[in-house]
Image 1 (cartoon, rainbow, N blue to C red):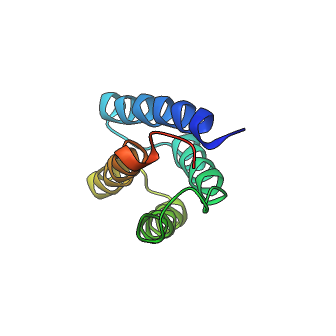
Image 2: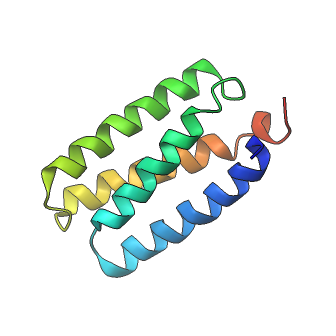
Length: 102
């Protein structure tokens, strides 16, 4: 799948997950797993994403791994971190420089 096609799908999923976590007031293991899968997939588009953004994506990945190992997804801190990762990733994907295929 080309980056632009995947980017649209990823943004939809990220926005839906963000809404679901806010509604439920907790992070689920499924949501964490899905976000880690999205990050892994995006990391595969390293030629389309600039180095600085790729470093941020790797930082987000590490944060999620820590959350996954934490096993208490209902804590407010977990919700805040999850939301920060999603928001940061959405901001990266919505950048103008990624609005076309390279």
